[in-house]
Image (cartoon, rainbow, N blue to C red; front, side):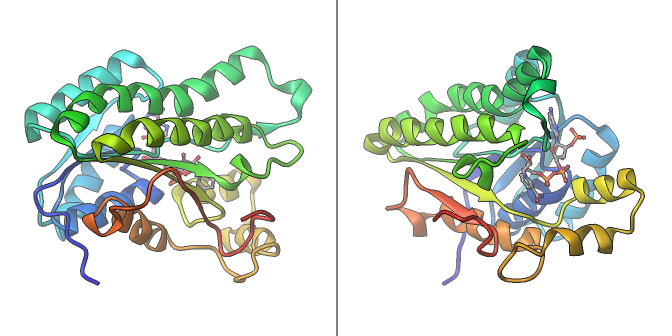
Length: 258
Ligand SMILES: NC(=O)c1ccc[n+]([C@@H]2O[C@H](COP(=O)([O-])OP(=O)(O)OC[C@H]3O[C@@H](n4cnc5c(N)ncnc54)[C@H](OP(=O)(O)O)[C@@H]3O)[C@@H](O)[C@H]2O)c1
């Protein structure tokens, strides 16, 4: 099946690295105009350059922090000025934040909700009316498998992600009559810059870090960001016109629940 996104315009938050970068690359190569949002200018510029080598659509990089409402409004405005409309939103920006429950302060809880849940709420709310009016829209919320199966010491991330799953369901119900389809993709363990940083911080080779974490992955390896991007691309295409309100594990079988 050939998937084309010709004529579509997308925003991918956290599109300068890892999973978001792979999604933006796939969307742009499939014909969509793509705006990526991230905080770091250098990585954004590099990503735009790299994505541009295979893009059929236009690609722009917008600097901003998705945890800050004003940044999101400015970024959305820039993308609208560049493309004239937004058909697709991928709420992906984020980092894993976990710890023992009693050590998580109000500030940490708030930061996590701002960066993940409120970022998705605010950006989707900006694009929602025009998606409904044009009777075509797609929203993907990138979450993690902890949303369905929270483990000890997985807060605040797993809690924020569970709320993201409820948000997905609410939006799917409200968007469906207007052909605005909303789904969640739940990450297990996917190749990304965050793991390179984590291995460095732990002072161990990346291979050792990965080997230790794939023990509970039935497929027996870390996922590639491109494998994740393939599913995202399918879900935002016309080929997925009857799929909404789902939360799909992309985890090599790691999650204990379906
Ligand atoms: N890879 C995994 O195995 C895994 C597992 C569970 C969940 N996830 C989730 O999947 C998503 C993508 O993660 P990844 O692994 O691809 O991470 P990554 O390699 O660290 O990339 C994260 C991207 O998000 C951007 N970003 C982070 N915070 C941001 C903010 N406040 N505002 C704007 N941009 C921001 C980063 O750029 P700047 O830092 O320059 O802003 C970067 O472009 C995240 O939500 C993550 O929590 C991933």
